[in-house]
Image 1: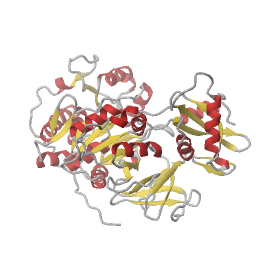
Image 2: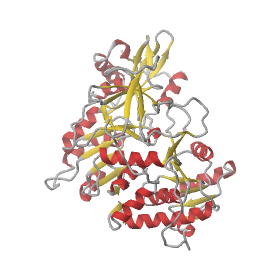
Image 3: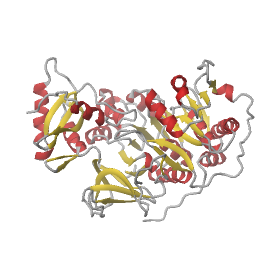
Length: 530
């Protein structure tokens, strides 16, 4: 494996370095304003000064909501610069999940939007560690009674560079990021300064980001992967909060975006939108866009092909987990994507596949659990006394099932918790979903195992129809199942099928298979397939 090097910076050093190199370069652009790297660094300094005073010590846990705006990056780097540990707070969480995150992380100071501050007000008596709530979007000054607007918190804070003295050790925990919880209670992942800085450099190199790059983030929330890699490269970021995928494409064109980052659910809608065919009419010859990059979960190959044909650029997919800071594999923007693959390992990253039973390493095209080793592998879980998923040699067991080809490209089959056995044969829900979604009558599909006393489990498929019939959908559903079953192995064949209004998903777009499995266990009767 080629040697991969990166500087031993603290997390906020990514921003400090970018601002020193090009203080007047655009860092962030929204529909309202543009913030330069120099301005962003200064804002991080002011927030750091306030937080250092409010916390009274280094090491305090500071919750920061990852809203897609210019406040989050300043708060994220500012909290780290003040010597705090940043706990990422998803502002879309319900009360129970928000309490779990804040209580588990022991958040002491929270920088959150007003809606999240109102939730915290209701939870305050159950969060004894929480001392201060700062509202980041209170432009009119209206906040809950026990909170303070950000502009008021910063009032009187000098507009000077913040000097924290000795910086943190590279191995110190910089950030707590919680898993999505699709297979259980969300876990707090302990990510070090080294983890995050190394992964920022890995992604910047693999995605071919540089100071001339312009990234379009069409995301519901700000992901630190996109933030850190762009800041590492000194790239400009366009934050598009309009949920309309075609509108986001227009924003990308006007901004001269080189990289378009989106979630599979939104990219799927874009691929299906009839406006896509004419979305690029009038675009000057030689557009700057070099790639559409999808992450979070798998994008259906058919949708990727439609986007590639319409936009004329590669549709790139990758693979990662919160435990990997978060990326370990990606297709490269300049390479021809291989259908079904999430690409090769990032620089400085090793990957292998091991047998599910013996744990012995497997050869190419043999299916087993994916393991990863590299500088981005987490320090461990927060308050978890279970067996470590990282062995003595540094191999992290991902919980994902897949295989490697002769060129080191990774192909994922499914999560260990999602695959199931039918008559002792392993069934991959994602494999079945891809075949069902090739049917032009199907907009989306989700598959889970339905408990069965004879076979262990049988395939249940939920489909969202493109054009639902006026009457009963059963004949269409039966036809879809029969069409797919002709291409599936006997143990993979659909035994039950149901029409859904929508596939239940997490805020990051991953199918919530647990919700469907619980419903099937409860005895709800979907339609039987032919």
